[in-house]
Length: 298
Image (cartoon, rainbow, N blue to C red; front, side, top):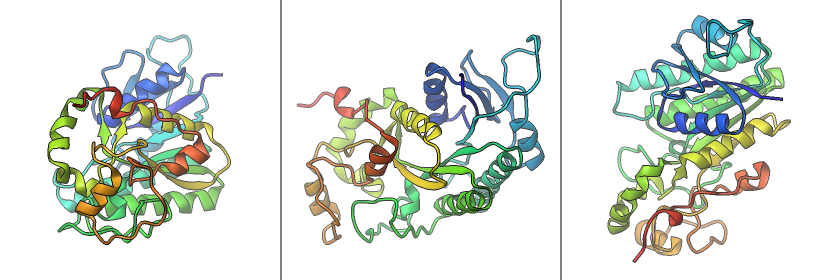
């Protein structure tokens, strides 16, 4: 049976690839966004996630493509995927980043809960680990960055994502819903692999994100796996590819850019420091789009 997915933020950089992946896998998707999505298989319902009434109405709407369809009655929703957000700092004032992201997520999860939708996937962020948008470069408590790390960000964007995770946990405890938060790494679209040689030449450039990345199509796979994995309650998963986005061995990156930071376990030669081990072991994620498939090396 076709799964029906309400997807917020499907017109964004990550969202449009994940929506396409889900549609290609046979899912029916309604995109809730403030901008249209250029995908003929998906209708966009213009929705402001900071307006709880709009969100409640949108999540209980008809999902089909055309107003002349034989029936316009809403059908049960299998899951909500919530990607809509201000995507980083320095785009709007800090208080707006926090307000939109925190209240938007609250509105989406609350509406899903009250409508009886049992599965919600939310987009969290690698920034929760506190390195990416720190005022000055800082060292982590340890490597690798895994889901039990004591998150301690200082910026408004990452703070909103930490609050969103706590909101998700509260609703999961309250309702028994499954709500999974994906701490998404730096999203790479297919055309962006042309940037990798420039990053290889300046390995310090991506230090703040610990050289992490997630291919947008692999993010689609992780999202699908999360939709299909039931019974976990509230969980957090890093969404990252297997290796770093550097051509240097991980040990060399650590020695050059994070000397003295404790390493909790043995790492593979090029293993990513934003670890996807939990996604692989619990969800069954198997990377399909390593940068090595697309970037020529000397």
